[in-house]
Length: 423
Image (cartoon, rainbow, N blue to C red; front, side, top):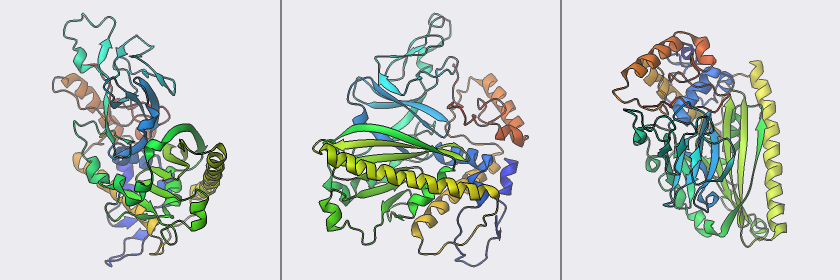
């Protein structure tokens, strides 16, 4: 944590002291925040482990047992439809030896079976079979199911996740996004009229915040809460020509890393997936209106794919300049409403979480599972490792002294979680 003081000096920014006036000039995030491993790990703790993340739509799960594998900021997880029709989410971590429970992108299963030692789990995450353990004295199957993740499905069928390991997340979905699924402009669209069509992705050598900054230039912060953004066209409405060509658009950016655009012929979701401080994957899911012709769908789909490719090129070039260290922390014009709000929210969340960690004297990983009181030995081991990490900045940069098992932070090059333990 000591190295983070370089980013959060009292009253300081990268460009010098914070002005004392009540309305200081607005500045973007410092260039170093787009390449720092320390900031990247802090974002994982302060943002991606705490905030609600728009992930997919329930249309991806038409049948019992349908499942998909996802990843965000180094955390791998599974979404699956169980026999009661619920969409559940679990960390993709076997409770025995932390091997991934699934290794494919998706499928349909009656049960999940880890290929390492054969531990099996139901669609509700409960442990079904543990070879060699089932007759072991003191082994409790009920405490060794898959590690759950909070799920919320909104009015329009979009699936949200929160990685906070608490019984209830610190931030409720209602507090973060109340009413965002009831926007009047969505009333013109019936999401049940669409089917999932395809998914695609692009990878780029740039920090995820660069692309988020770029998107937020075209969005105005929601008046209801700072966690969502609505599209801000010149007059707030589609032109008659756009309407006639099926381009009537309603777009929303959902902080921190997702956007959704709905048109009469399709809607698509975009997730910005941080892979490292300077690499990002853009992952798209495209849903087609059941009544649209092939020509209508393909024309609009290709227009947006071309736009996404152009965005990538701009982001790559921006990252190159940020990496040189030449870029200064310039001033933003007050009319740049979208870009101002995004860095303000990011800066505030990181500073707040860093302060909590300073007060606690240790890193705080909300996604880390809480140990039962009886697991005193395990806690001692994890505390020992965590202290090594806090005293050695190189350990943090490498992903933690033990690869993340102590809560010092799992390596982001592999989708693992600092939560697994047989109890």
